[in-house]
Image 1 (cartoon, rainbow, N blue to C red):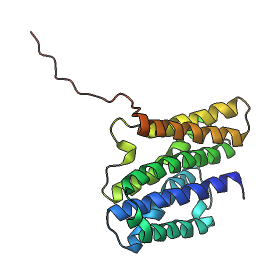
Image 2 (cartoon, rainbow, N blue to C red):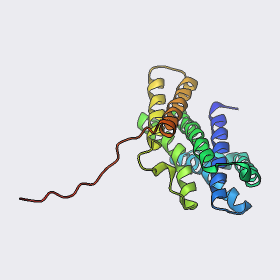
Image 3 (spheres, rainbow, N blue to C red):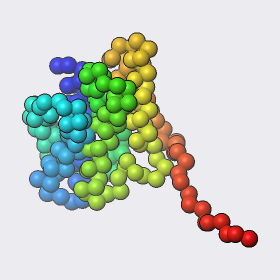
Image 4 (cartoon, rainbow, N blue to C red):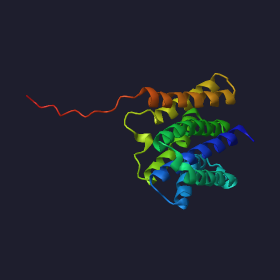
Amino acid sequence: MSLLALLDYASVLVFALTGALVASRAQLDLVGFAFVACLTAVGGGTMRDLLLDRDPVFWVGQPAYILIASGAAALVFFTAHLVESRYRLLIWLDSFALSIAVAAGTGVALAQAQPPVIVVLMGMMTGCLGGLMRDVVCNEVPLVLKQGELYVSCALAGAVAAVIATGLGLATLTALGLCAIVCWGLRAGSLIFGWRLPVYKSRPPRTRG
């Protein structure tokens, strides 16, 4: 199994678990669990593959991805009630899924020798879109858009780190490992230490004297 396929499998599994946890919070049935889990698991990778003109899209060429996501949904459906804090588990699983998926998307674009800007955007898209779709469909406040929290910026930093590493001549495996570490480290810091970016604050219009 190639490194890129392994990253895709890992991100599909972990993102599917987060999708199923959100479905449990919405109290959906088993089919609803599977739908949300699959949407979350393959949403970002699907957009990546369509934009990069990969034929076929990764889960169409290998339907095992859908089976893995559906299996994860079934597992959560029957065990979610055992978890004391599903939201806390959700945000931590999501942080791991984000870092793996950003590395996967970055790796795919690097393998196609895409320009650095496209590599970074594909990494961010792969990491962020599935979770955004999940939260919107289940009427949750998207983690991607939580005020001040580091999320998309984590994906950006991880993908940029990989581009810089490959530009310095480091091996792809090392670059993608650095990508995942930087992305997860920033996200974990945001969750544990409250790291934030400045947010826009409106100001009253100036009055003329």
